[in-house]
Image (cartoon, rainbow, N blue to C red; front, top):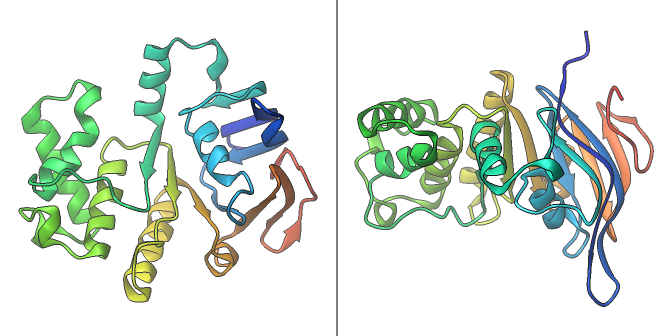
Length: 239
């Protein structure tokens, strides 16, 4: 049985005044449990793609469904609830709160889920243990290395048990060893059932993942999974 799509884009475009087209009729399906890269050079449209997939922005035309919900028909409050329930974000520059320890930074990922503080902190401690930072949970960001900060950010993204993790250049600000550890964690998270999408300009990272969706000039120019070409502007694996 084919698992239900986590994300589905159909003929999605994103245009701006002046005739700028960041996305051009993109069709993409991300299935439950996939591990994929959205890869392309600066200006290719992959950042716009992140915003559309994460419901941080809406397409100019076309449709986007997240967990079966057409986002165009949702109010801002329902869209925020959908995002909080189904999507976790990891960014290149961590976005951790200075002066707050790792537990509270992770617990902040549950702020909008209506979870009491004590329970938020309990779940945060569990999430930190899951990214191998149990011994650093009382440390503030200025006491952590870059790799540790990124692992805190991953724990924060995962504390609400989202179906989809969107990682935007997750190794971009890290040294090689820290970057390898972060990618190892993303593989482990995917193996445990989380759908993971890595947005990157790094072809080496992209080539290490089972599926690669390559962008150029706002279009998908190739989509491969397990080394098998799916063709340009595909609707995705299994579609």
